Length: 283
Image (cartoon, rainbow, N blue to C red):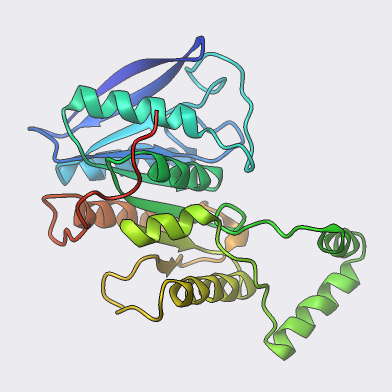
């Protein structure tokens, strides 16, 4: 394999990226998107570097990028969960696909990178598969609760830990779970591509995620066969409090991304994505 540094012009700045290319012509490419907080293209614990090299061994190119104002990218840093850097990721993805001469893309993202990955998938026809990595919170894939009551409830819980504990106890006794639905992009990707969600979290957030998947399946017309169902949920081996720090979590993330993309992108052992993949490629 070989690694190429590239700089992609974007809105008066330049986005830095590393493209890892396997020996021989790649059969597809995978864009790796980290979360907020200033992590560079290697990601924390060199997670993306290690993932890229595993993908290359499977015949897939990998693209690791720095968002504006981070690492080797120029420009001003500025994005959040409500306005993720989708346009930046699209610019890097399009140039990379053209340079590599491939037409099939997978995208994997952590935290706000997961929300960005969903945005890329909904905009780029070449995208065949998405992996959302959510070690702790579900905010990247669930719609935010709206209204003064929801905000007031969160504020009270932050101010009074005893109330927060009481609310958790009630949820445990009654089986109550938040009915927050997925963001629209999750349903769009699940309908026409392949979507994997990796989650650590807590017992409560795991139940929330399972409930959201069940609600989406119902909205799409009932239960689907387990095999090749989308979205597929896998729970990480450690809870969300430890994030990506445990070595077993890092290994699970790398193995899951590489195996999923190997299976989903054309030429892999289990390719089954419908022709046309996701959305139309809007400029």
